[in-house]
Structures are given as structure tokens and as C-alpha cells.
Amino acid sequence: MRTVNGRSQLLGLALASLVSFGPGCGVQQRAAEKLIDPQLRSEGVLVERQRGRRDLELGRYRVEELELVDETFDGSGPLAPDADGRTRPTEQLRMSFTLAGGAQPWTAECVGQRRQPPDHDLAVLAGELRDEVAVHCQLAGGESRWVLRVEGPLTNNLLGRVYAAGEAEPGELGEVGELGQLGEGGPGRVVEVVMWYQLWNFTRRHLPASLVVIRGDEGTEAALILDAPERAWLDAALDDSGRELALTTMLALRLLPLGFDG
Image (cartoon, rainbow, N blue to C red; front, top):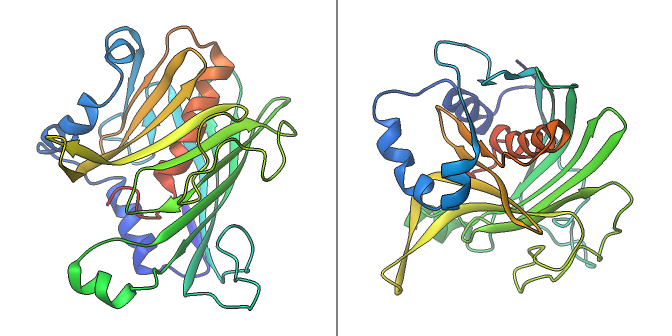
């Protein structure tokens, strides 16, 4: 695992979280696990973080050649300045890794951005995360090429999509919600980062450990708890390529330190 171009506080804390787990982690993950589709939990293939290993390994799969680069915001993507050139402080990270151990290696090359909210000072005083984030990844395994896009504010669960490269152009990713999230009705699979849950139908709470879920036409295909020790559930009907695509997608969101884990 390598980081270059300096280590921001955000990078340092995020990398430390990947190797810090203890006896209380099972309790912390319980709420997230209950939100996973019951059929996937009972019939899916469970792969778990290998304890005692410095590198991130889930079952036979392992993350190799992880690089995180803390770089200057380039003004691109959904968080780009408006037509008048106005913007807010934005952090940009570039990340790449290889998922090895499967039928074939998969690679991920990602850009993650995180922008301060308009009421940043109030958010800090309230101890709340209101930043806006955007993730764009190029995923590749053999001849397969996929694109992952997720964007929205950390005040809500985030919706995005993973789809075959060339399957869609910007603006063709399905229904776009009022907060700019990429929702149902588009190509590929829906990817949801679940950070909040409803309590008693009138209030909501932040999950102690967040969750990423991938849904296809037939239902939930995969889920990963974004907390150490990492655990992932994969639909038993997925072939090797489908499982490795799902793991690469979910691990990209786990490894980008943008605040998904609270």
C-alpha cells in the first residue's frame, strides 16, 4: 500500500481504519447487517477479512498495489465550478488498486472528490457531515470494461450505477433525484451507499458502520460492510466475472476515504 504527494489527515485516518478492528466490531456492524437482503445473507457466498493480515484480503481475494494520491482539485466532474466560476473548497483523491486471487485480476482507477457544503461553519459546530462527494471509477478485468459513478451529499444515502463502458453517456444514467443522485431506470446495476436508516418511521439515525449494496434486475447481488473487519455477501448465482466485478466495485468505495464510513 502506497500513498504519495503527501498524507492529509483524511488519508491517514482512512488508511488506519482499514487495519483497526477489535472485539466490539461485531456489535458496530449489526445494524448494517440487518439491512442486507435476507435471501442474500442466508443463501449468498460470504467472504470475510482475513484477520492478522496487513493487506486487505477477503477470502481468496486480496487488494494489491493500492495507491492513493492527494491532489489539487482539477475543476472537473459534477462538483465543477458553476457557470460564473463559483465553487467551494474541494478535496480530490486519485486511487488505483488491483484485485487479485480470482479467475483473473481486476483493476480500479478512481477519482474521488469531496466539497464543503455552503453552511460549512454551521456543520462543523453541529458536528455533522454535510459535504458533497463524487466518485468516478474505471474498472477492468480481462476484456471487460466498466464504469462506476456515485455522487451526492453525505446527509443522505447515495445512489449511483456501475455499467459497461460505452453503455451510456453522461445524462443517460437513469432517473436523477432532486439531490443529483443517479437512480433507477438506467443501464447496468444500481449501487447504493447506505449510511442512514429509518427508526420508528419518524426519525433516522446514522449507521455505526455503513454498507454498500449492488442491485441488478433480479434483486440484490452483493453487499459489503464498510467497516473493519470487512465482510461481503455475493449472490451464489454470480459467475466469477460477476463476483469479481462486484467486489472491485464495493472495495473502490471502501478504500476511497471520502466519509462513507462516518
